[in-house]
Length: 187
Image 1 (cartoon, rainbow, N blue to C red):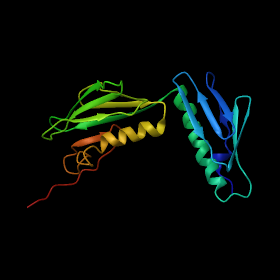
Image 2 (image 1 turned 135 degrees about the horizontal axis):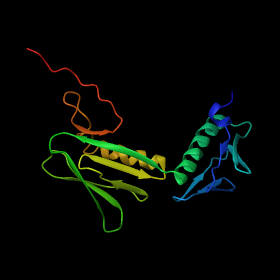
Image 3 (image 1 turned 90 degrees about the vertical axis):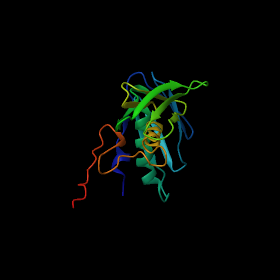
Image 4 (image 1 turned 45 degrees about the vertical axis):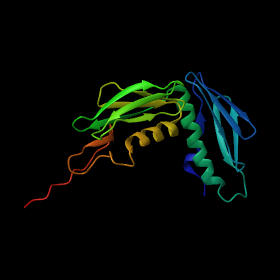
């Protein structure tokens, strides 16, 4: 059984440089550099501007890893050339966000979420936080996994206390997220 995703070759766009050193792949582009270590069950070859990924024979999960790492490498190539962005929206009376930076240069956002105290979230290195308006937060970076995790951490801040609630829809949500509201109790 062959992985359909793993069979597709990856085309390297102009301005992106891919270096293969044993089981380590380095992807450099206009926005930065990412490094990925491949498992020993994966073989990767580069011909001109095309990467092909194959599974070594006689490995139990080589085919599954082939598709997974093909998708991860594709995301790295897109990240260093275009970057990734997630948008969050704050819905609720008095819910506000304010951007800032820490002393070591990391981006942070101060959130007022109807609690007795403001909540601060500091992003990891490589993640940019922007606040275009007081009820919107934009998380961006070159690593898709890191961008998604940072957005999920902001959304689930305070142990999920400020995730969207099902009656009024208040909380922190993704910009493209659709919340199904429940009907209130009737007498």
